[in-house]
Amino acid sequence: MKINYYYRQEWVPTGVDPNILEKTFGEWLETVAKDSIDRLIHCPAELTDEDIATLLTYIEMQRIRVPRQSDIAKELMRATILSLAPPDAVSAIQSGEVLLTMKDSARFDYMRMIIGGALSMVWPDGMGGF
Image (cartoon, rainbow, N blue to C red; front, side, top):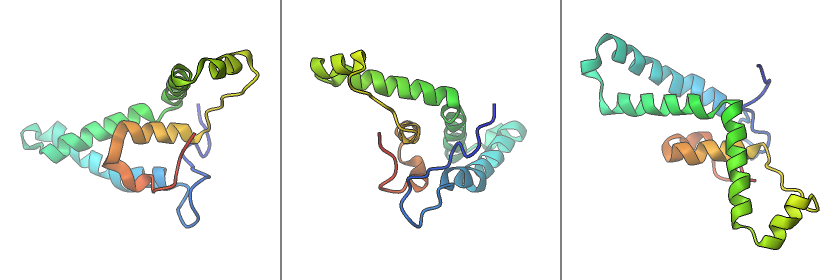
């Protein structure tokens, strides 16, 4: 499956590149991860704590940034909202009287929550939201 502009963040503030996520992965994380992977394969005894952190971040980003994980994240967010909402709001949502929509930005919020501050440069303040 191919989704064009899947990582494009149309809602970013003026002056921020909407493709910052993919560019950052290509220019930083994937490059650093390659060096750590090479070290893991060729001389694992030389792995540093930074290499291990890089490998874990890279693997986790590969796992959570695919469409299937995005769908799971949106389902989890919806379930959380429904579990915390007042009963009358839940009834209105379940009956279709009120529409609960998870915006596309929710998947970026999910990635941010999972990875935390490690990639804060990819999500400048003011980005994301439900």
